[in-house]
Each structure stands twice: as C-alpha cells, then as structure tokens.
Length: 303
Image (cartoon, rainbow, N blue to C red):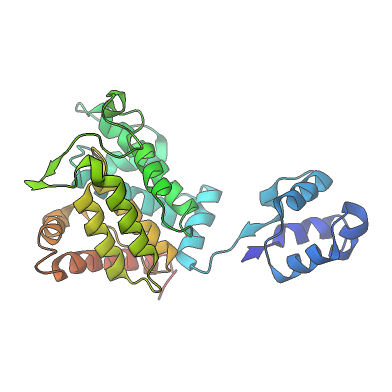
C-alpha cells in the first residue's frame, strides 16, 4: 500500500484540495482516485507533482508494508534512527554472521564501526574483517530495500558483490565477485556442486522455491540448506545464505531469525545432518527466531 500523507500535508500547506490538482498540475481525476485509495501511481505523475511543488518524491508518498517488522526497519533506516530495531538488527546480524565465518571483530568493535565508522582496536585487526563488516551493513540495507521482491539470481549475486567488494579476494581474477564460482571447492570435507553445474542447480532451486504457494519458516530453512549444499560462490556463501533467510522472512511476514555465533556448532550440525534429521537445523533457526522475538518485544513491536 502507498501512503500519500506527505502529499496531503503539502496540499494543506498550499491551501489546495486533491481535486485542484486536475486544473493546476494536469493530474487526471482517475489518478486522483488512485491517490485516495492508496494505490500506486505512475513515476512520471510523481515527477510532475515534484516539479509542481518543488519537492522530492519521498515528500509526496512512500510504500507501506503489511509486515510491521519490515516497516519499522524501513522507517528507522530512512530516519537514520539510533538505538532502535534497525540499529540492533544491523549490529547483531552482522556481528554473528561474520563471526561464524571467522571474523576477529568483537561485538563492541562491530558496534563501533556501525555507530562511529571507527574501529577502536588495541590489537591488529585484519583489514578484510573491517571491510566485510562495513559491506555487511550495506548488504542488510539492500535486503531491507528489496525484501518484498521475489528472490532471484540477480538479488543473490548482488548480495555477494556487496559483501566481497574491496576485500583481498576481489582482486583475484579467478574469484569472480558477484558471479558464480570458477573453481571447485570442498566445505567441511564435503564436495559441493561443480562450477559447470552451479547455474543449472541454482535455477532449479529458485524455480522450486518460488513455485510454492505458501512459504513457512521450514521452507526457508530448507532453501538455506540447499543453497549451502550448492555453495555457488567461491567464498561468502554462508553470509549470503543467512541474508537470504532474513530477506525471505521479511518477504513472507515471518519473524526473522539470526544464528548467534555461540550457537554455530549446533548450526553446523544442522547443516551436516539435514539429510538424516532435519530437526537439528530447524530447531537452531527457531532458537534464533525466539531471540529476535525477544528484541521485537523489547521495542514493543510484538506482544
């Protein structure tokens, strides 16, 4: 749904009614009816209104999500609000996901980078840890922005590009930042899908997932396992995979989950044992969901 509260305020300030826009700004009565219903209007019409009132598009309208968690994240992100749900989500999701992958940064150092753009480290910290932390903040923003869009290869590749740009890996010709791997890799002693078959397997995975008429958290966890089993990128698959989970939870109005670093051994067991006992990984993700629910209750977003 689209909110035109900003436009209504501008009209009031200028002593105008919506119906006056027909004669003064050349807006059709049909478009005015859409505005009254909260429906989306064409971009060229928004541009015309911006030119007429001398304002920006965000001053006229904004999209309102049916998902209250996503709406709070978007509102706080837009307002650059400190200390709220968006703030804590960025730090907790980034710290835990990077730490699982071996980052040396503490949660306090992660918080410093987000809040002050400084590191404050007394000991030497790998440059890539800092770069990947800053990149992960941008990746979370991207997830929030595209949360309600269908999951596509382009979104997945963009996440990888955001996460790995500027790292030492990005300067390796064979690493292929933002594209599927060129070299075979083994994870935890397990062979992953060969580079020549990654595109085919990813297309098949996305088709099967997007064809479902109803998505539950178990479906998102299953997608995550299959994504990690394919391991489509040379590196960064875990972080990309967990960001996809967060996005898809927001897309389907499911409380998101964050896998905490202190639970990583349970997480690894869940991935390793999926084919034999799915409950391990599902329970670990549900535990992460409970932790996020507690955060939502703290901020009064859910009861």
